[in-house]
Image (cartoon, rainbow, N blue to C red; front, side):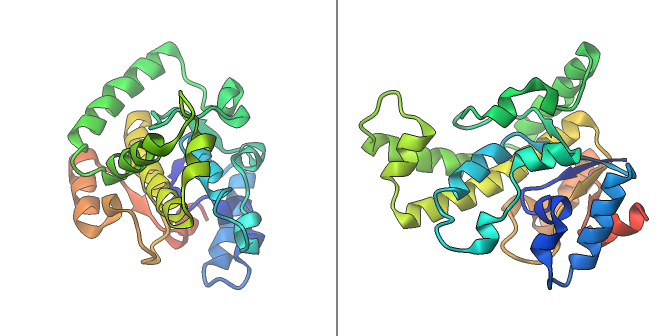
Length: 230
C-alpha cells in the first residue's frame, strides 16, 4: 500500500514521541510500527523542505516545533520523496539527493507526468496555496536588495507576521502539491489529520468530495489508516 502524507500528517508517524499525550498518539505509534514492518510505504512531496526551512525562521521558542523531525529523518525511517514543482525552487541536500526519491522507470515518469500536470491544470482554481505563496514572495522580493533573491534573503526581510503568513501559505501549498503528486503517482491513500485545525482550503468538504469524484482520491485520517494497515 502506497500512502502519501500531507504537510500535517507525517511528523508524528515518523517520530510518535512528539505526540505523547495527544488523543491520536496510539494511532501514531501503530502507524510508526506498521511502516517499520513494511505494511505500507510512505511518501512525501519535496516541497516540504521549503516548509521546514521557513519554519526554521519561525520556531524561536516552542520546543515541539524545534523537535519536529526533518525530512532527512523521514528518509532514514524509510519514507521517500515525490518530485514536485516548487514556487521558489530552493535547494537542500535532502532534495538534491536522487536516492531519496521514489524509484521510477522512464515509463513510470512519463505516466506520472501525463497524470500530474493535467491534474494541476484542472485543480488550478482550487489550489490556493501556490497563488498565496507567490504573492508573499513577490512582496518580499520587492523589498530585498539582493538580486537574484534567495529564499534566505527573502525571509530575512520579513516581519514576524509575514513569516507566520509564509509558513501557513507554504504548508497549504505543500498539501496542494502533494495531492497533485498523489494523483500523478497513482498512490493508494492520502493521509491527512482530521482534527479541524485550519486545514488547507483544498481539504474542505466540498473539495474532498470533488477530488474523490473526479480523481478517485481515497482520504484517510490517522485512525482510519491505522485500521487499514492493522
